[in-house]
Amino acid sequence: MIKEKIERRNSGQALVITALVISLLIISTFYYVYDVMRARQESSQLSLEEYVLMVKLGSVHTVISSLTNVTNGGNTQLLVENLEAWSSKLKNECSYGYCLLNAYPRNTSPYSSGFHISWGQNGFGISSCYVRFNLTIYGRDVEASLEYSVNVTTSITIQGFYSQGTGTEKHVEILCKVFNEGSPALAENFNVYYQNGSIWIQTQSYSLTDYGNGTYHITFNANILTVPVNVSVGVYDARQIYVQANTTCTEA
Amino acid sequence: MKLKKRRSGQIRILEAFFAALLIFASLFLIPSPPTSENNSPNDLYSIGMNTLLQLDADGSLSKLIKNKDWNRLRNILKQVLPNGVWFNLTVLNNAGAQLNDVLISNGQPISDKIVSIEYLCAASSPTYSIYIIYLQLARAS
Image (cartoon, rainbow over all chains, first blue to last red; front, side, top):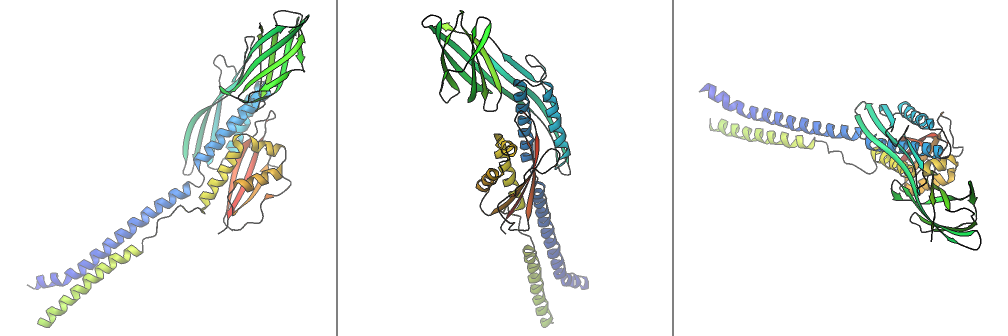
């Protein structure tokens, strides 16, 4: 009887203690959730996604710079030097802790040391550079590894036609299409040549029609002694990459 | 005896009330979850980084630096960055020497909470160079 009384008396205290335990549980659970959310937000401060975009963009510019240089007469070795400079800078200035960028210029045919430059006789010319990258980032809260490749290609197709004028004079028309990575692209600084005997002569007096969609129409008159009429067109794209193509004109 | 029983009943009610009060009080101690406010440092970092990425996408950032066109760079940043955001841009060359001889900024910082962004910019011109860009941003608090 006495025991029952004591149990009854204590039941209220047990209720309060249980309430205290429940409230402590609620508080601790919410504090844990709050802490996790805050930690996530802090770790995103140095957004990895944006950093990777910066590295990729820099890699593209490095490849473009090397291709621009090589198509303007530079050494192909420059690609490796530029890639090493970019990789080294990333390593030294990494805001995450440790960034390692390995670059592998493509060496499988038709590429050699990362380059495929072919300014052919068949009306097609290509200046291309292909590099595969492997980026590894280690940091306090970050660990990421990804592979990506950069392919910078400028190509040109030309078709030539001519009609016989008076004497040896010929009226030449060239239809020229410029592409960047397969898509029509704008070009500038056209160099137009025709072959007279065994000598290539650059013509300055040509007229150029820009259709605004990567297609250009070039016309000029020249005294060309030899037949067939061979012409050559060299252009710089907006990235200053040079590409050239030669073709034999068909009589219109 | 009756009085004792009545009192014990009142005490039980008080205890139950106290227990309920304790649980409800714990709810008031719960912190509000962090909201993604627009003026957080993370947001400023993202704005700054995206601005530089946008400028660098077509190679215009390195061209402006190469041509030392600091006034144009300042004007572009003024246009691209949101109103009320203070900026200060410093450009260093590969060796770490400062390239900009003029201040690329839109005034004095308007807040103590300054976010600093480091950006590496590779030039796509035939003469290859890498620039280190420091962009500081602050927003009116």
